[in-house]
Image 1: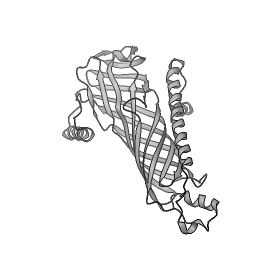
Image 2: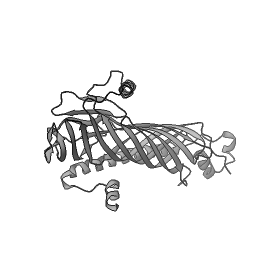
Image 3: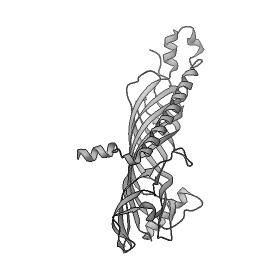
Length: 323
């Protein structure tokens, strides 16, 4: 039990994948540098002029600094962010009765957060009275692409015959990725912790939601591919962050942990030109009519660490009155 929990929370090092870990380290350093630069810019742009003119002469300079820092209060915030994910290896199972019923073990995923389409997210937050508890609707666009050149272990039935014990992933799949989005939409509860400074507020959050990936899966011997937006199951998200407040805006730096369960219908169809909502409507119509996916189902679990940094704009902010 302890070993399993440890494996989920932090990956075991594999010398053959050192290049992947190095790349992740470089991505995290880049994100940290960008957020540090943004915070430095915020400090440089001071809050002069935010207090009322009538109080300028009567309020000592140190009290002005506290009052202009706009401590947390009841407000809305709309934000956007970028970042970098690390997704653990996971098993992928394909089930199509009479044809395929196999599992490939420990598929390695790469995220490529700075390659088009990039990693990004958008969110809307609502802080309640007092600014200590709130709610957030959070959309994250990440990516997971299987490393097809790697050799993997296998078990089960492949193309009607026993699967080999080991094979290169590219000998089984032409494509295995969610490259236009390992998309997650979550509703989160938020709690602000004790302020480190009138400008600096740590917070934690927990949320649940749904996966809306763009699936691209095609077997090596298959003639059809699945290439469309889909609903594939639930996701759970936990986060811890730090908010740096300036007048009307906030910089935030955050760590997120996500656990996404995928059940992918292999429809063998290309997505509509209209996009996400049309694809989801078509999927719902197939489900309602009882249509069985012609190429079966694919399943996996995507567990990820994510570091993000972003900027939010606050609305209806009312700084607390000075004591």
